[in-house]
Length: 259
Image 1 (cartoon, rainbow, N blue to C red):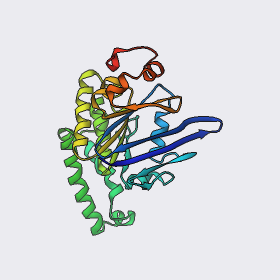
Image 2: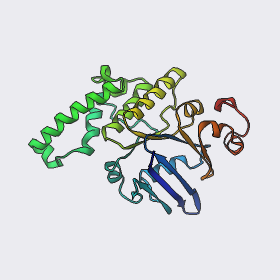
Image 3: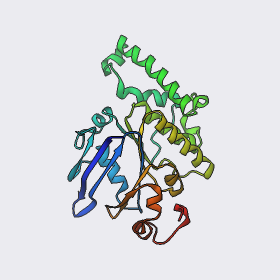
Image 4: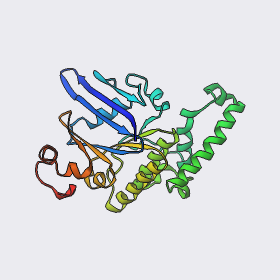
């Protein structure tokens, strides 16, 4: 496997506060990599830097060797780095299917005037987006819910819809912000299998997550942050045995990460 995403020396300062301090790691094509750490460790800031929602104070992010840090977020998304958000950002008054169709417009060939005037290019886009939306919903097990209003979905299905919206942008690497948050054990098991299936679809995944059971089940590698710095990186087994992680992240041995 080769490095798809390379993060080098990322630092982000907010005035006198250093939220992220000299963080480096790489994500190889086809991997599932999780970023973990205590609250305030800098995980969400790293996500925003990778997806270009924030510009780094120092350091850079490269996708397949090309620098993407500092570009506008929609340009980075078009290049293949797409993120979901911890909050379920869907149009809750619209149907499930329409939410996914709208998310395709990042890939539109027709411009805004074309959609307004109903040009032939816009009509072709609309047909293709509807076909793709149906395929994504079937793939994620949401086909039977396509006509439902998003606000009526249970929590697990809302999370799956968030992933569907991300897939509509045709990502090379999909950044998932706490995909298992607020789920019970059964929902988490289904969501873990869902994320694995997304990887099997050919999408590389980078996660921020607090659910250690899910992280250890799903990750090829884990990056651990504390106070904005990377303190460990390795396989789940290596992270479970790392004294720095046990002390800094958990404070003591804890069976939730399998120790």
